[in-house]
Image 1 (cartoon, helix red, strand yellow):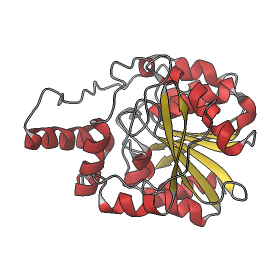
Image 2 (cartoon, rainbow, N blue to C red):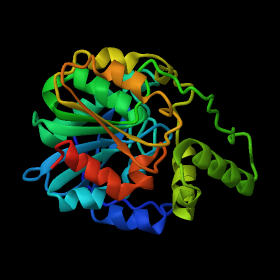
Image 3 (cartoon, one colour):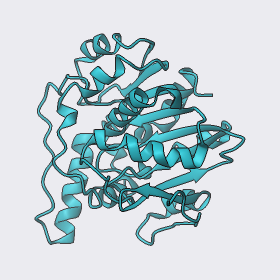
Image 4 (spheres, rainbow, N blue to C red):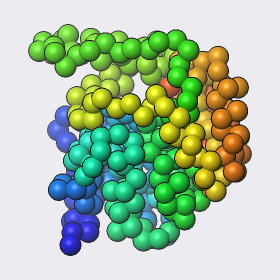
Length: 292
């Protein structure tokens, strides 16, 4: 039976230099994922440091946490940031093509990396749905659950947000322009945040997303799962997140049904990708909810 593959450094040639530099400080480990492998990116001492698992958003990869990994290490944490099945460098999940297909291979992998130890679980957007479903399925795994602007709460955005299509485009410059547009419309509040680095990461991540047609984000699947989660649960979101704008009170009314909902933190002057756009304020929010 396969468990954990040989640990090797992994710095893909296409990765922007700032991301490559962060990745080079850690290591990559593969755990089983159906017929393929789930890629984990690890930093710090897993045996001695306090473990934090970071789950990225849809059409993303571990790079959604690029600006947060080193500060969390400096706070004494070991970081485990997988490419979720079907995203980044990970293979497709063994069954299903949505958030509910993720907890099983993630838990199997973490058993090989951490054993039964509980960890802080932080999930962004789609990864927040995954985190909640995982905490519901394996409650002993999670000591604290931090949801960063997750969907799946039965509250779709008040304004219709639809990214532009790009897969039909063969011209690289046209693809790049569409990815930049989608980044601006979906992820950021401040125009200045649409930097070359952010655009490179957006394009690299989106073009490795093989889980098209996801639908659970438009349901209340996370809301239902959270009603059975005993871990302290927190919400962090950006002030100008278009998915949350003008309905935070309604979203919090859903979260208050959690057994141990501690509360929310709004990061000022931030959009959806809050941990990248306002990294320092986001890290302060994490410390504020007890991630220390």
